[in-house]
Image (cartoon, rainbow, N blue to C red; front, side, top):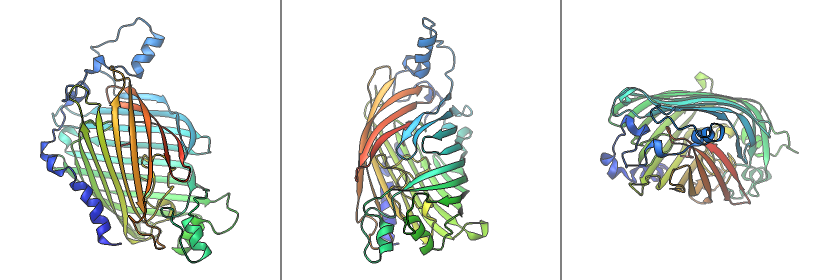
Length: 427
């Protein structure tokens, strides 16, 4: 990989660095009133208030009761990758301790089934101990997956053999891969200076009983890639060590109005801990938020850049970075997960968030994203770009934690489009 690819991505981190020293770490009353003089929580209206008015009309709200940071809901979702989903989900947010510089801790768990035959259970957390001395980030996943596959790269037609053309899949023909998937990931960060954390951890990803049930011949992207780079078609493991540096001044982990988030890391997959192949990756995650109003801080411009770059070794096909392959599978709205994927991948998104109702119950967003990838067959990173974009509606689900129900319609190239529904912002 040419070193300038990493340099270009890292340069995104410098965007806004001059303002780092001016960022303010929120105090515990972030749950009650933001430092930008937003409307007090008691004047905001969320789904809990709606249910109270529907099922207990006339009952006044208890303004003295501390708002709950826990939301338990039926888990309804939809996007083109999974189809329609039903299940149960719990999301929790709380500031631990009474220190004035402790960020909100959040956790979520869900069990669900989808119309495409996906069974999915996960438990994840992002916990800050008092005074932000430690930050623990992790997840546990067990699933029966049905993964749409559209080939390797960014959509350029490879030259040469029939296998090369099938692997690049320039017409974006849809394949479907079925598998069992298990993942355990845990990272522990130590705050070494205000807002600056150093961390390390492990990630174990296991896929078993992988099969392309709809394939009519052997020339599928998954088979070609697996055979070419020495991976078993039926199963593999991608196990590695994680080393990260993180800087954050976001005022809220669910929906930031201001601040910055930076995470850069190295992942080293090792065969001696069970990985099918050795590999070294560099990952970068940069997010910046600008509030446009002191009286209505929900007017926000948000920017996100995420990238992953293979430095050495080989990755299994389904673990290649790409569309929707960020930590929470929220990037690339307009396309299904993995629509574009490659060893070198670069993604950026710009979003405008704005309130619609004065009580904050409804708000809206518009967004635009671009992505680029190589294809290991002649197309280089940044040589070709694929756009996506759309707009959406937000419903305030839990005002104590700023949790929104997100309803988006997005579209991209090759006729890709769809409705995306989820809980909490994309980034």
